Image (cartoon, rainbow, N blue to C red):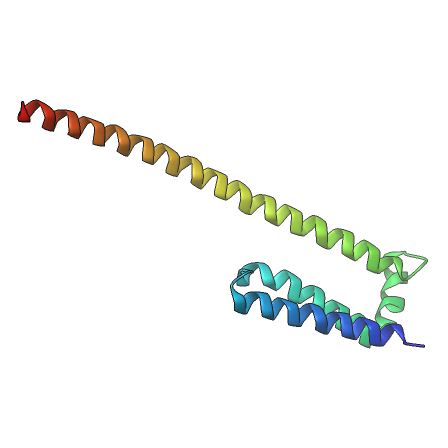
Length: 121
């Protein structure tokens, strides 16, 4: 039977190798990859030292230590979602500003074309 330590170690290494592959291919920006490297390191750490979970659980008042993993995953994904929303909001603001700038440039271009037409005729 395969131990959970081995499974955690392999899953952490798998996540890390996939992240490196995606970054090298240009499919994942380096800033976003740090989050997933942290996930891989946590998997490796908890798989290598499962006693950490048993040590931290009583300090946090959690009676069943494996629940720390579930709570950590939920917190991680909530933080990741918040981070994604922050970046998306910044991009929406930038798109709005660029759209307004293009509209102003089109108005200026139209005015320039009209002024050239007046001088040509």
